[in-house]
Length: 135
Image (cartoon, rainbow, N blue to C red; front, side):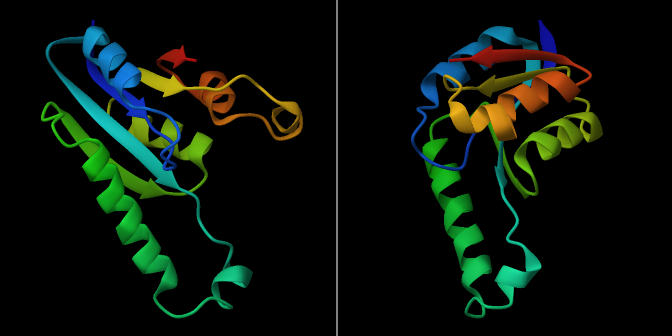
């Protein structure tokens, strides 16, 4: 059983949260914490300057609102939204906040993952804590 479980969630809504929440709850010790983290990829500066003013901020606000809505009813889960590179940010956030288990959802690797690598694979390779990968 773990004292602080981090459930890493992709900001897109294609992956249902129910299975991840179930596993996180099973892994959390009685009285333990569960945090659901989603990472918004940063827009490169050279692209950001070409976008209409306020577009990135409003997009972030919509993502945060949708994420909280997806977690509505999960009162035992603290939602957190941050930005950066997903794989690196999940690992860094877990280290900064004393997480002792990361639950990350994964898909069946495809050709692009062979070149770039998946977020789950990066978390598994770099995390200093236990990582539970769900398919």
